[in-house]
Amino acid sequence: MKLIKYIFWILPFLFISCLEQVESKYDNYQEATNDNLETRGWIPKEIILPSMTEIYLRTNIDINTCVFSYKLSSEDLKKVKDKLTSTNYEFIEPRGIKIPSWWLKGVYGLKVKAILEEDDWIYIAVNERQNQIYGWRN
View 1 (spheres, rainbow, N blue to C red):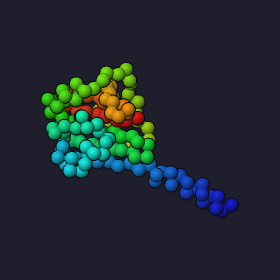
View 2: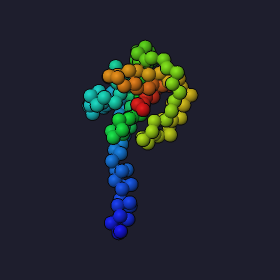
View 3: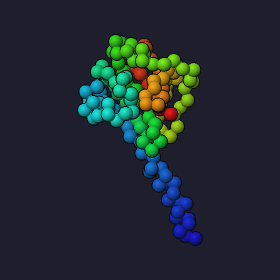
View 4: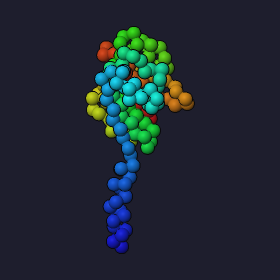
């Protein structure tokens, strides 16, 4: 009977520890590429551009989800916008990942677009006034 009590106390902690979330921050494109941002696959390669700054990425490997944001030059922002597909999708907060409040405040109210990468839709919201990209996988 004691063993069962211990199991019920330990199981939640084991479950939480399995949800590995990794947060990465980079000042610029060079720092991010030095840490293999392009090969990790969280941000689609076609929207990773040299003018990227203030790069934020949080991933949950166990459920294959992430949120990210970064700023771009006006020229590169236009390149990204040209690659996006319009959607009727309304923003729904990704589950299973801790999202910073500044990220949520930034994405709310923006029109959601998407980009298809290897049969996986990545949702993108663009703040044109701040040249800011917000992205996530659900």
